[in-house]
Length: 248
Image (cartoon, rainbow, N blue to C red; front, side, top):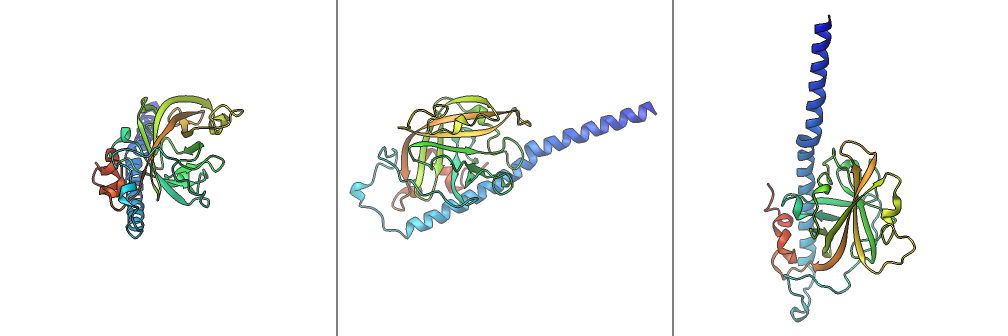
């Protein structure tokens, strides 16, 4: 009897390990591929819209290899659960391309694998803090590798208007109740913002929600979507991602 119970426990343990492996790697890979396809399709629709719009005066078109440092366009906040952008992080590979939707609801946004925008924070390119959240594991694990970011890594946010470029600065670990990371100037509620920030938030450690891992970045420039440019103006660093030619 003891031997039978022992074998059952070992079998149960193996089943649990296989399930965790399925959730962490295989299933997340499947969902991640679906999200990437969604992002590529959305980018193509925006390209088609740009192609139907008259191009600006070529003499006023910025260098396609350098971001514009002028004040970027800022769109109005969309309706809850509506997709309005994509996240591209070269550090995480040419096949990392994830949709961003409005709101951080578990069932209508996060459990769909999307990154969710905190409605209380600013929109991409706006002075202040553009803050987003996603699952670390399961449902695509869109921020699974947040801990791998290194100083200076580029973080791109794509919208119908173009690509906002941010540069990663540092990680921070806070309690689940640490909402100061959503301040217009993160963790400094008494200071009025004068810069544009991006804040990525997810659970930590992996497979738990005891605390949050936070990644901060600062704005560097904007690449406008323009039908007159190769790849509609997508930065060369991520051109293969947004055109769907860099998928693994």
